[in-house]
Length: 163
Image (cartoon, rainbow, N blue to C red; front, side, top):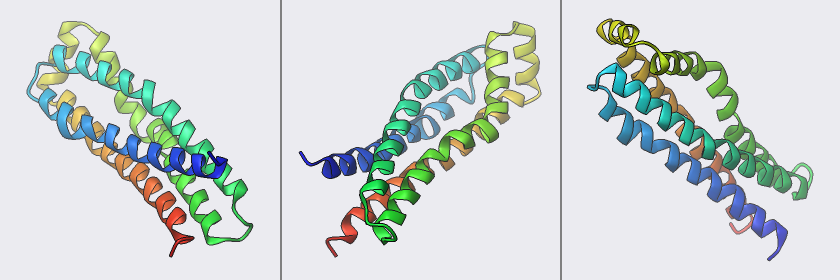
């Protein structure tokens, strides 16, 4: 298989896989945690987050690396090159967005999941746990859109030559 074709398949499909994979916690999992006690919801959140990170980080790296190769292999100054660069950049931007925007809430939920029952009860009674879970779900939708946009940009770049 041609390395360009392989890179297109990897870059585009992995961005779409990320988008779909990250959609599930916001759409299906976290809403089920909202009514649960903090002792349950924070522990389950920790598991969801850790399992997600185990896939999201390497697949993001794979998608970005394939996009970088496509940028390198595309003609200088071409629209195709610009689109592959944008695809890789938008897909990569999820990682710093997670660190800068989402990590404070994630750390608080992790602390609560490892904390004492009294701290969990206090955080639940004040609405803090529900607020943190809903904020994470909403912020995660942004990441879903970012990786989906990365996939669409890559797909458009690939189809541009055929139009």
